[in-house]
Length: 135
Image (cartoon, rainbow, N blue to C red; front, side):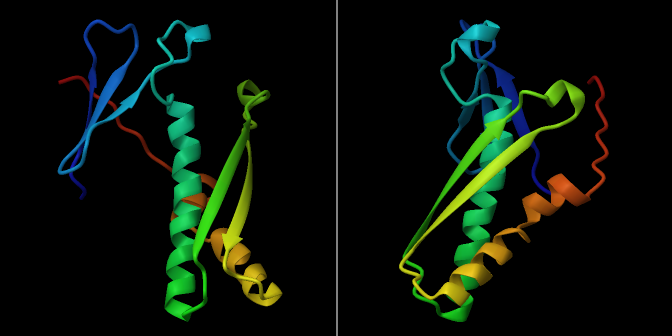
């Protein structure tokens, strides 16, 4: 089991939260101004989208490194369409920009590998059980 992540409400802010992950710098989450927050940090939806984009980037980099391909870097852009979220549809368009890879077969393989990142699998194939309790 992993070390827990702790979220603490920030005083003097409406909805801003401090996120503590042991051994790492604190992160923050907030709500956009149009929903009553300060808009001072990514919102929870942003972190959901960030998880997918960063996982794809890391997965592609790890694969290219293992294959000793000349990947110099990757830029991942995640565009959200949450216009139908209330109907259970949440769309993410992910664009991968591979730096240093010109071979079409390697590029295609890296795109394919990006679909296998653990977070995409978690988002699309897993059953997630959430237990919430008061302490």
